[in-house]
Image (cartoon, rainbow, N blue to C red; front, side, top):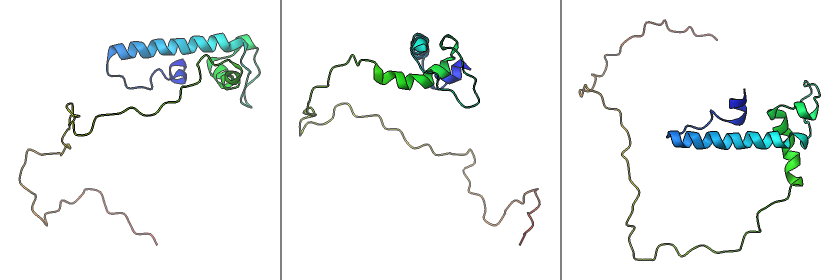
Length: 131
């Protein structure tokens, strides 16, 4: 249940190192939810019974976390105004072009085209017309 709720099985990772980083990221998110347990408000569904703050599940803490976030101080500074960079100078070609791949076309071992008019009949009976 926890793997699906926190999204551990969601990404399709290409390397074991990326999987390790994703696991550690989820562990820190789970720890953050555990630490916010005392401060989060229990936003429960109508069919859920009320529970004390120490017994909230991670999913219920996550639901209440959205009300807790605006109350916290933001540690980041205001972004500095800037304009876009100069980019590549005009007249200079791109020395590292992106690799291009051909579109995959299905090829068969049989190079001959099938003859027209020789349709194979399916084993399924035709559906009846209704109406």
